[in-house]
Image (cartoon, rainbow, N blue to C red; front, side, top):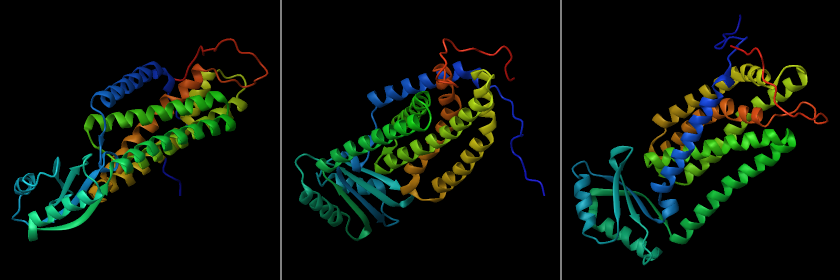
Length: 314
C-alpha cells in the first residue's frame, strides 16, 4: 500500500524570489511591534503587576453589574471584573497598592466574601506582592535572554557563525512579533506566556536547524551549485517536513485553545501565533540571512563576492 503524499516529491519553488518582500514585511512587523510595546505596553497580569485575583462562581440571579456596584462601595482599590470561560464564573482583580501588604490583601478578600455573601462561591484566590512581581519580570526576561544566547553558542559550535546569526535573528524576529501582537490585542501577559515564548524559541530553532542541516549537507554534496539555488533546493527538500510538523502541531494547539478551558487560552494563543511566525521565519528569514552572509563551502578559500545564478528554479 503506497503512502499518501500531501506535497509532491520533486517540489521546485523559488522561495528566495520573494526575499525582498519577506524582508520588508518582517521589518514592518517588527517596527509595528516595537511601537505597540512602547506606546501601548503589555497587559501584564497579576503575576507581573502584583495584586489579588479572586475567582468566584456566582448565583444565576446575580449580575456582573450588581457585583461591580457592591464591590465599588468597599474602597479597596482599582477593581476589574470579567467573566472567565462561562457566564457564571467571574474573575475579580484588585490591583496592587503600595500601601497594602499581604494582610491587607487578605482583608480585601474577606471584605469581598462578606459583601457578596452566600450568592457566590470563592473557588480560587491568588496574591502577588510588588516585590515578587518585579522579580518575576526580571527572571522572565533573563530566562529568554539566556535561552537565546545558549542557542547562539550551540549553533555556532554545531555549524558556523553565519548559521548562528541567522538562527538567532529568526528567534528574535519571532519573539518580538509575538509580543507585539499581544500588546496590540492587549491580551493578558503572565507567566504562562513566558513559558509559551520559551517554547516558541525551541520550536522555531528546531525548524531552522532542520533547514540549516540540509543546507550544510548540500554544500558538501553539490560543489559547483551556486548558493542561491542550493538554498532554494534545500528549502524544497525540507518543505514537506516543515509543513507537516506545523500542521500537526497547530491541530493540537487549536484543540487546546477551543477545548482546554480559559486558563490555557493565553498560552495556546501565544503558541499558535509562534508556530505560524516560526514556520515563516525558518523559510524566509533564516535562509536568506546566510545568503547575505555568504556561507562558505571551504574556509580555506577566500570568497570575495556572492555568485548569483543565471538560471533559477521557477
